[in-house]
Amino acid sequence: MPATPSPYPAEALVSPLRTLSAEWVLLPDGWHQRMEIRFDTDGVIHDVAPATGSPDEDLLVPGMINGHSHVFQLDLIGRNQRFQHPGDDFWSWRTGMYALASTLTPTTQEDVAYRAFRAMLAHGYTTVCEFHYTHGATRRDNGEMPVLMSEAVLRAAERAGIRIRLLPVLYQQGGFGERPLTREQRSFGLDTQVYLGLMDHLRHEVPLSSLQTLGYAPHSLRAVGLDALRDLVDHRNETAADAPIHMHISEQVREVNEAVLGLGRRPVEWLIDTFDLDASWCLVHATHMSPAERSALAASGAVVCLCPTTEADLGDGYFSLLDWLAHRGTWAIGTDSNGSVNPAEEIRLLDWHQRLHTRRRNAFQFDSSLGAGTRLFQQALAGGRQAASLPVGRIEPGAFADVIALHRTPRHADMAADDILNAWLYSANPSWIRQVYTEGQPRLTPTP
Ligand SMILES: [Zn+2]
Image: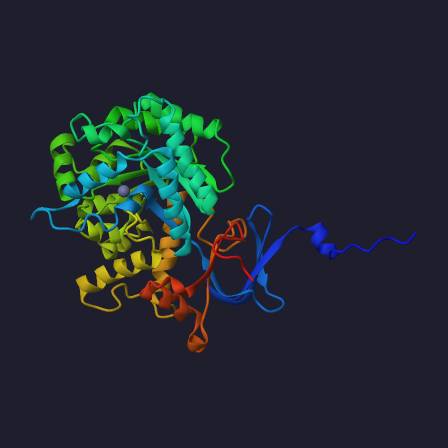
């Protein structure tokens, strides 16, 4: 009896690898023409090789990592721009944020998180580090509330198709000197043992998908005292040594001044003197550092996460990226308050700050083989990879196939691939994005 011919090519039965190809692909060493990414059923890149046949996409670049987000703040947009008094700043903005946070339930948390994650994907973020402090801890009718609120965020991320490093936050003080939590802050507050129990529960009892991982987030030095911070770091070292630690720091001049009064040192200085900082630490903002703090922090290997649109909106001040790069510091970008969920806008504003400051177009003096936007994009990918502590941000074997497909319209047919990437970054217009993939799966509209 003759054998029935297989309907599948022999290699498809031997290897379940899937492919994604493009006319131009941005690899770690620059642009390569006509390349194919082959990845396994888990969405991990097996190899990158010259493409055969006509390519699927015009350009493929790594998906961006959002190093810092509070999803619920998406719904603050437009509600807090009216003049209230001459001293409006971060601290008065915070009052409106507290009012919104107090209304959240697991259902509304999942809803706003889903909308934020979908918007992030549509603009090119494929991974998000969600700094999650809306635990609903004052809803004493339900002791499970912190678990339910974390699960709501995880569920929203899974439905959206975005990769997430969920960072449940430890928040215990209303300010330096063990000031008690204010009434509005109480829903964020967890005892240290409750917090560590939440981390254990999420790790062991909640089935995390292949897109989901956990990390630690002491909110800030003003919200977490020394003993609790030590307990958190010990727990992480003993139970989850590959998990990153994220913390807000030195966002505000007032915060720095209060640290000097309360701790006797500036925040970054105190942290470096007290803990062994290394590449697993991600310090968010770090806007107001002294030259000595900047030098010591860069040398520690920690990454800073910059959130230029939020820092601009709140009037925080701007980060001196030129000085940071002079110390070989690494940096990521984050959406923070989610007024913007667009990585191109963060990178553009970061560059424009430096241009306005130096009064030069090429503030960074990069070599001219690639556009300034490409260089900054690559640096943000490297820092984001470190902040997330995940194999993302590079198109290479072993990394996740989390990529953005950019397209060139007939009107831009004469433009080089690098110019297309810079067109997206300096226009901040998401219409340059044709598709976004995580684990090699299209997450926007179905591919044709
Ligand atoms: Zn933040």
